[in-house]
Length: 372
Ligand code: GAL
Image (cartoon, rainbow, N blue to C red):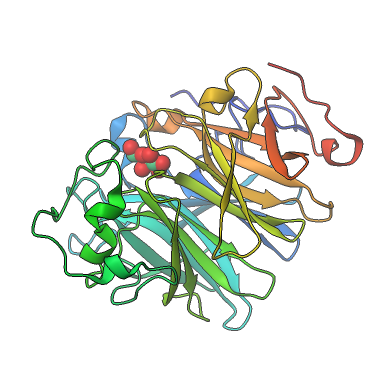
């Protein structure tokens, strides 16, 4: 890929276009997450390379900083892959959807990500944890594991505690279509009780009371788990719930608006886009109620060719949230694009409409984007 030339400062978002950093280089932070700390936004994401190899971790987790959300400074690699072949995060492993939160008690920055071990496809289904003293790193890798080993969810069914049938495979294909229609019958939760629950697409969310949650696609991706972290955010607390069984929620992004918990997620179709889903709950441990596809208008059935990654509040603006999605380029990973759109509301339902160009003024003066 040619290095794009530097351009003038942008004061708007242009979803799907090249997004140049302070060096004029397309931002390299895919499957990203946003942290706001002491007046600065930090955007963390997967550093991709050209070609399909770029879908594996060759470099690590990239971080950028911004004061205004339009201009981004390259802050380098927050978490580097290891050159020790025995490390869980050795070069060539898969590090996806990194998220960073700040722990006010320990004063540490804590990063969680989806980790797949090198040359093992998507079989490992682990969460990785790293910690740092500064938002831009360097982060130190601590461990990777399958969450909640030996703990039943708060909404466990009596049938899930029964002995596991011998017909339950130790592993399915890791996508849609490998399991029977109702995964609960297979009891993947019970299968993985001892060794820990599978954890693939993931996100983090910090509630107003400082409790943090790990949201991950589990049970062969068929069911979403929402899991409370320990007070230091470095591991799971063992308190979790399972939701949306058989819905294959991926790319789940959790946020709080108007005193309620909202979720925007995708279906499970690999790098190919699909129709997003949304849901609402009064309590983080449910019950959750689905609200349908939040995207509206042309190409809403494929979420404007993107997949949800994160939803974050714009600091200083009331009820202003930005949807972050990825337009993946599986065959040339570095060329992935970012689809940022304002979250609008139709009654209690979050809405996302396409805008080729928009700015933060939409949150005070109403929509000023152009229709696709
Ligand atoms: C998607 C997932 C991505 C990545 C991809 C690999 O479903 O959301 O994060 O894991 O599959 O095919």
